[in-house]
Each structure stands twice: as structure tokens, then as C-alpha cells.
Image 1 (cartoon, rainbow over the protein chains, first blue to last red):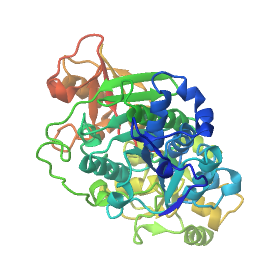
Image 2: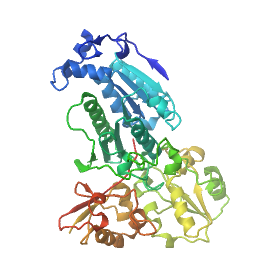
Image 3: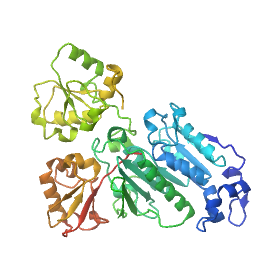
Image 4: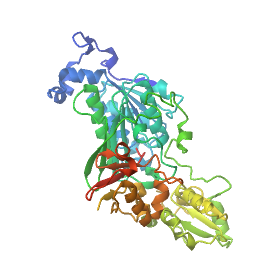
Length: 404
Length: 90
């Protein structure tokens, strides 16, 4: 870990207010936070609490961007950022903390620079690491509260179990297409993530945002709700989302709430837990802890874009089945490919002949692996997965196609 | 008839519909009606043994049916059931 603070006024070094044992605010800080100080529910002491607080933001992507920006602006004294990725062109549609000048730069570094530009009085710690069972305890140790802005199921279960085991609140947010969820899972006062979701969905049922897409503004809505809940938690004001799940839909503009209850049989937060230390979450979920899916079904079932091109050029009879959604054909398509969206494959299997050679393809090779499993379990054997999908074809064979 | 809200990840298996009117005196009957009309949904909601899968969260209004009477929870004419999906995007 590396620490950086440009100001001598960092949280750790301010003299303490003797009455409250909270760090004092400088005149500059009083000026900066005057709109907070004017709110009776915050006031001077509330702002001092924010300055004394420490928050770990896991993930500096769609959700982590607004969370980190607003927490920095609000004057949270110490903010940790965990991410292992670099800024990619396709991030900029929603990850508003990063900009085009930061393409290829570590996300934690890009985010830290922007946060310290907003507010040089805070301390930003960066952890350019994959958040795992091995390092999670060490990384989370100094922080009061954890914000889950990750993009995959294994890391979400890891963050939950970590928070339960260490008694920290987990400010949860999750997004997909037009749907968002938010809650505060705090086992000391209410249910945890596992009380609601005891098990992850089977691999492939819930597409990642990389495969299924997400409205760029959606993480802004949900991330700012997470930041709001974090600040309320630190200040000890208002009604929190503990024991409630917010279900937001951007299309309907609906905000619905459902009640969450402690599951007395919860495997991690009940009185007789099965999980008493961090486990292997990739194994538990049966999927990798990232949304960068491999697009491979294993060597035996894969065909590379170049090999497929060679076979097609040689005149081999191969049926190309595109399992994407119809609207994706407008972005890119392969000549001669027939469309059977993954969701219809089981009911349209009669259109295929297991005696024929079939190559399945999608955007990047995740849905086609699911399609391959569907066909293989129905007895098809002469089937292959186009490794890396039509994006790999665009990279290796036909650069006239765009990559999305 | 009670209605059931289908979450985005399951819509491809229900002709893309958001909300479906279902027939049944209780949750089990409503789900049976749903999966008869949309058989593709069945394997996503139920295990091979016919039990509701653990990741399927069914709520009646604001309440998790697990905290009511499970699949035996009775349904009224204008009840709103919803499946709350696990989503992981960030």
C-alpha cells in the first residue's frame, strides 16, 4: 500500500478537539465544508466525524467512481481504494472518476489523482491488488466501513463475509442494465448479504455488465445512494437501509423497498455459523472473481477465430450459430451466421442437427459457452465455441468489424 | 389475478415480459401456472427435485415469502409477487 496526502492537514495529524476527541477543522476546512456545517444534523461535530472516519471502497469502476468522488468531496478523512485494473476506453461511458487522459493508467491511481484534486485535505490509500481471501483482512483492517462496488459474485460474498467476521458495515450496491439494488448489510444490527442470497446464482444465468450491458447513469444513481448511506452511518443520523433492500428501476423510475430479515440459519452471521473464516469464493460461486470472462470452453471445445477462418476458407461445411440478442447484429455480424438467442436455444434445438458441425458464437465467448453446455447436455458432440467471440474475430480476422 | 414481476435476467425465458398475471390460490400454484406457460423458466426457478432454488428470492409485497408460509403462502386477487434477482454488476 502507498499513502499520499498533499496537505499537512491530513486526518491523522490534526490536533484533537478536547471536548469531542475528534480532529479539529482548520479555517480552510470550515470554509470548504460550510454547506455541511449549516445543516444541524451535520454541524461542526458531524464534519469532524467525517474527518475522523475511514472508508474502504472495493472497486473503482461504475459504482466506485461516484462513491469515491462524493466521499472525497464530503471530507472523509481517510479513503482506501482497491482495484487491480487499468482504465479502458469502454469504462468511460459510466466510470466518471476516470478520463480519456487516464487510459491505460491504474484505476486506483487515476481515481486518487482526481480525488486529491477535489480535496487535497484527505488521505487516499491505494491497493492495486485483486481483493482476495488472502489480503482482504489486511487491507480492510484500518477502515470503519466497507463499500461494495465490485462487479462479480465471488468478491461480493468475500466483502460480505469479511464485514460479518470483522463487525463492519457493508454498504452494498449492485447494477444490471436498468436495475439497481442498494442496502446496508450490517450483521451487528441486521441481516447480511447471505441472509438474502444464501447461494449465488448458477454460473451464466446472470450476465455481467460486460456481456449484458448497463445504462451508464445507473451506477451514478446507485453509487450516490451508497455514498449517502455511508455518510449517514458515520454521522449516526437518519434511517439507514439496514434491514431494507432498495430496488430501483430506471425505466419505470421506480424505487421499491422490501424488508430483509436475519436468517437464523445464515451460514455466516447466525449463532452457529458454518463459515468462520474467509473461504475460496471463486470455488463457492463456480465463477471467476472478475467480469473479464475468458470466453473459453476449454481447449477441447474451443476454436480460435483464425482456425475458424481457415476452415471456412477451405470450404468445410460448418453451421455458424450466433447466440446473441437480435439488437447486437446491428453492431457486428458474421456472414452466414444464423441467429438463435441463448434464451431460445433449448426450445429451438430441433432446428439443429447433431450430425452437422456447429460453431457457436457470441460477443466474447461467454454466452456461447453456455450454449455449448446446453447442446452438449442434449447429446450434441460436433460443436465448438468461438473462443473470445465475434470480438476475437474482429481482432484476429476482420478488422473492418468494430469491437464492443 | 395476482401478478408476478420478472427480473431482467429471467426475462429472456419469459418472452421478454416484465410482469405476468398468474393464476393460483397460493405461491406454489402461481409458480406452477407460470412455469407451465413459460417452461424455460422452470429450470432457473426449481431444482431437479422440484424445490425452489436457494438463490430465488420471492417477495409478496415487501415480505420475503420465506418469512411468510413459503410456497404455501396464500395469494389474493391483487397481490404482487416479485422475484428479486441476484445481480453483481458494479
